[in-house]
Length: 210
Image 1 (cartoon, rainbow, N blue to C red):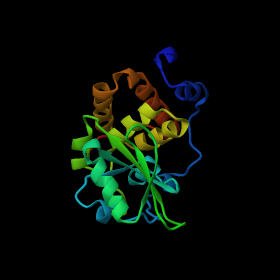
Image 2: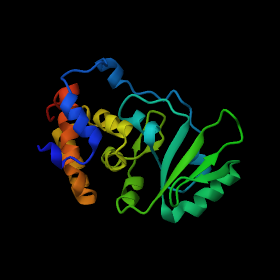
Image 3: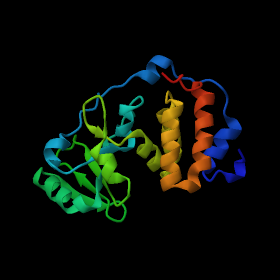
Image 4: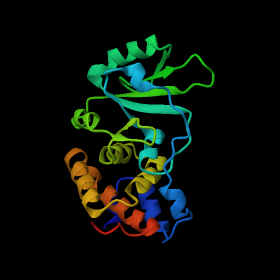
């Protein structure tokens, strides 16, 4: 693997410095919790398909990260309906995050803001039809698409999240993730391959196939 072919600088730094082993216990890494009680988006959004992304989505696959924002993804065709549903539920539509994306803020000071990612991605409709589920039963973006999104975002936290998402995956699961990246972001394949190596270095090799 050539370091020069890796696009993300965080991955290049990690490859230079990575050492075997991890500071987290297996018990803590295997823990799945839903301590943070999210608003009932199933009730609020009704028939609109949606899924958790961001920090909250991790708790379906890895230890949860505490956050005060809830990130969800919807199809662009449902943007107007989602805005209307959130307003009916008492949310205030705030700033535009990116083109089409928006934030919804609750009246209560201790409530969660909801960042809504609005997407036209070709894979999204199928992903929303067959979501994973977090410990509380909320729909969560399937692992391969969550990794794809984080790989394309490329921030330091996203890179760290990907290694947690890859930990414990089988070779078959990794092949499916690889195929997804080849299809939708082939230019990032070397980055993905490097993260697989970093994951195995930190957490150990994948489990044997059943």
